[in-house]
Image 1 (cartoon, helix red, strand yellow):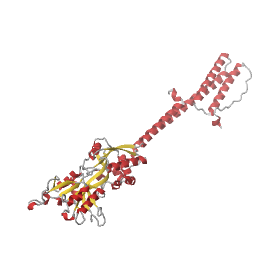
Image 2 (cartoon, one colour; image 1 turned 90 degrees about the vertical axis):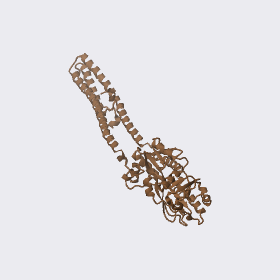
Image 3 (tube, helix red, strand yellow; image 1 turned 180 degrees about the vertical axis):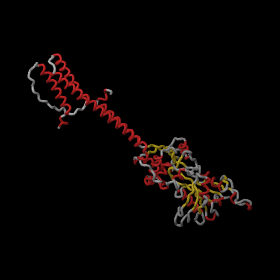
Image 4 (cartoon, helix red, strand yellow; image 1 turned 120 degrees about the horizontal axis):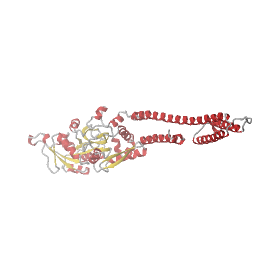
Length: 473
């Protein structure tokens, strides 16, 4: 065995290195996971919500941290997720759906809300044929969404300056064959446009509870002779979603826009879009579960800063299999949270725990064997010195040769030097040192007695000395 292993410091160094490796592994596993989240467009409510979430995670010192990366448009944030430049992203599926994106949570739904004066004759979406629809757009994708719905009902959108084709000119054309003129407006222009007969109804894509939706409905009411407004239904939402899976079927609850009188007086079916927090499909399952869990656990804190946080919800699904195979698939980690099937630490790292226990047990056995081997070699070394001292005692009694006695005395001095050096480098118990002292004294006494050439042998009493008073106490 190498000489350096005989030193106590080397043994302790091995133990320190092993403990350092374990501490490093624990530190690595317990450090927060930082994720990049792409958000667009800038200065929208979604950006404020995700930034508030990132700040709340940092203040709470959670195991997840977010690095918010703002973009100019929701298309750009989706592209960042698809290209791998972000781990999470705020996505509006009808604008751009990243191929590797899986839903964690629905931040909020936005519905197509169409309000018309009661005397306009517009009760359903198909009644818009031959009409002029004022559109209060908040995003560049709002008009394409309306155009897709018009196409579903075989209606053709026309530029704002063109007159829509009549719904039924002389009975030659069915109502569904008409066109709809889309007139872009600001919310503040809706009432005037209705009063001047530039539009027949107004539309906005927004959360039903949002102020922007309420403003449009109130403007239609203000321009109507009876101060009322009809919320136009799109009852074929489920069928539309089958053809346009990036859209959502949305229900506007009765009384959403006021309760005296109740507006609407009954729930209204419509369709719309959703803003979703999506993760790349390769994101670890437990990490996705933690992001989703913290998002909903911190909802009350987020709502105090960004009221839209109250609109967050879980995606609709009936089973885990349905969730991961839906038209807008849900991340398995998010499903774990929603189904309350999140893995514990032992379940998550079961394989690693088994391997560490297996190899750790082997390492512990090796260290124990090494310690025993070192202790055995230390004892063997001392036993060899004791055996030699006893042999010198017998040899000294058996000779009167001065040269032989001198050689034995020199050998005894060498053994004493070796024992002292060994005792300085290693812990030696008091009983062993006492035996060594007795053996040295006896050997030296035998040599000294034989040198006196026949003089009476002195009786000697063994001096039991302890080099470790604390241990002998």
